[in-house]
Structures are given as C-alpha cells and as structure tokens.
Image (tube, rainbow, N blue to C red):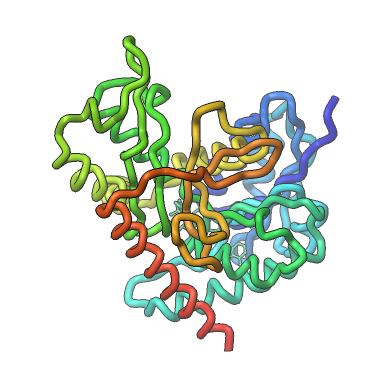
Length: 331
Ligand code: NAX
C-alpha cells in the first residue's frame, strides 16, 4: 500500500473547507488508491466548529483517511505536509477599504509562509484559494524563499471550469467534450476567459469553439462577463459564496498538477510568471499549463490577437497594482 500523503487545509472550518475535506478523504484530489492524512487549521474563534468537522470526518469512516489533525497552531498544522491548500483568509466586509483587507491578508500569508517554510515537507506543493488569491500566493512566495517558486500556485481552475460549463450549456454538449479554454490573469473580475483555442469533441471529430458557436457577439461579450461575474451570481442566488464548486476545482487543480493533465489538454493555473506572453515577471498570473510528473509548464506559442492582448494586459495591470498595494502593507 502507498504511504499516506499529508494534506493541509487552512480555513477548514469555513464553507469551502467543509465541502473540500470530504472530497480529499474520498480520493477526489489524489486518487482512489492514495491514503491521506488531513491537517486542518483554523483560528481560535472557529476551534469548536473545527473540532466538529473532525468528528464528522471520523463518523464518515473514510477508508482512505488515515488520520486527522485539527488545530489552531500553525506550526503543528504545517508539520510535514506534502500538499497545502490555503483557504483561510480575511474576507472583505461591507464598507472595508481594499487596503485594510489587503493588509490583514498580507500579515496572514506572511506568517503562514514562514510556518510552511519551517515545517512543511521540502517538496510541498501549495495552492492558494483565499482571496485575493494571486496576491496572497505572491506574498507566500516572497516569505517562503526556500520553497521553490514553481511549487506555489493559486486557484483559477474554478473560473476555467465555469468557462467550460458555459460553452457546454450553450452548445448542449457534455462538459467533458469541451476543452482548452484559458483563464488569463487575476482571479477577479478583470480575468480574461479566452475561447480562441478551445475545442469541442463532436461526432465528426474535434472542432474549434469559434467554428461551432457562430455568435461571435456572445463569445466576445456575454460569455466573458458571465464567467467573470459568476461568483457574484452565486452569492446572489445562494446568499453565500461558491463552495462546492470551489472545493471541487481545488481538487481538480491538485490532481492534475500531481497526476498530470491528459494528452492534448491544458488547464488554467495561477503561477509565477516567467515573462511568457509578455506578462511581467514577478506576478502570480493565470496561464494555460500542462502538467507532467508533478510539474506544470506554461503552454507556449499560442497566437494572441489584439482583443486578447488588451484584456491580458489589463488584468496584468491590476495584478501589478495589487502587488504594490500588498508591498505598501508590509511597512
Ligand atoms: P469562510 O469565511 O466560510 O471560511 C474561511 C475560514 O478561514 C473561516 O473558518 C475562518 O475562521 C478561517 N480563517 C480566517 N483566518 C484564518 C487564518 N489566519 N488561518 C486559518 N484560518 C483562518 O469562507 P469560504 O467561503 O470558505 O471562502 C474561503 C476563501 O476562498 C475566501 O477568501 C474566498 O474569497 C475565497 N474564494 C476563492 C475562490 C477562488 O476561485 N480562488 C472561489 C471561492 C471563494 O470565494
């Protein structure tokens, strides 16, 4: 039998955490033959609720779940973890300044970066979910210099999956027959959902989405805004933000990263920019990536038209602004 993998979930008493931990314990993240030990971190006010989640995990009698650590101690939570899913953070509350929210998250991610650096397994892979996801990941990277930068990513897979979902609904095809959309940039409303390279598998072979969806107007406007605004639409409908879809996408992100993307398919991940596609280095930016043997690489050579270029640059600009805001919170 395989050795268990230790998976940290921060903010585990929250709503995404509650959806995510059973998925991990069922093998949705690392595969049906991979035992796991769950490390769950939350803060003191949520300690009792966190313990309740631990009780439920025990009660569910998951065959793959070899242990549960539920704690409010960051060092204990990070001890020897192989995968860290960072869901905990400070939410934006009504009437709060952007700078104040940023400042809270900068201090959380600075502290958790140091704890991961000190206590996690040396090859630990990190996925930041908590918003502002790209910038929290950047802060984590800055303050965990011994963790390779390629091991620090943020979640844009939910946006990617939302884009697949919109195309599938529009064409009335199964979502698994749609692939290779791209989310460029920030996990925010400036993200650019790009369908120019996306394809659909039909009975007569693989067709480009642009070829099948003849309504360019829909693809160039409503499709984009629907994906960008989907989070807000969920909040309006549920009075709560997306949780099950966020949890499921976090599993997709880690699974594809660790186990590889299928041949001919790419996914979107927020990763440290190496300057690909003219995106400045030093930002965590969402790119199309393929994964093999536990490593992602940015898909190269895609043709970028003027419409896309402008949108890719706009979301990069927002990230550069977030970055300077975050840095101004450090002093
Ligand atoms: P909840 O407020 O339900 O849960 C957050 C949990 O984090 C709480 O239990 C809180 O006590 C805990 N927490 C706060 N500070 C902490 C700290 N320093 N260490 C450990 N735990 C801490 O929020 P939820 O709906 O679960 O969302 C979690 C985060 O995901 C939010 O930042 C949210 O904005 C973000 N999202 C990101 C998405 C993405 O695609 N990247 C999509 C979904 C979601 O909106």
